[in-house]
Image 1 (cartoon, one colour):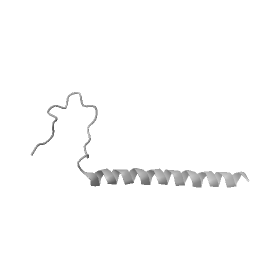
Image 2 (cartoon, one colour):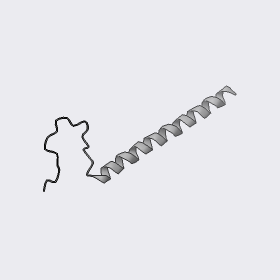
Image 3 (cartoon, helix red, strand yellow):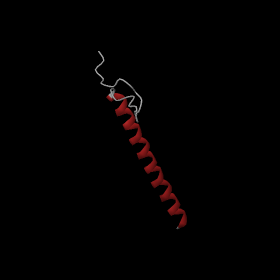
Image 4 (cartoon, one colour):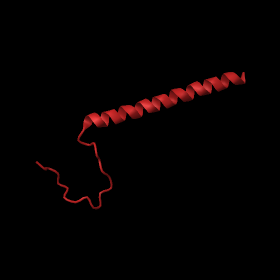
Length: 55
């Protein structure tokens, strides 16, 4: 059953590949959060070590 009102892709500005798969969207979101948290923690550790070396 094809319920999409879209008949042509010409002029489309974005393709939402996983829009109908909430599990994939949630996985990508959690992956982005994990990478962001890792980056922030790594930055904090590096800055603390650098600050200790200056003392």
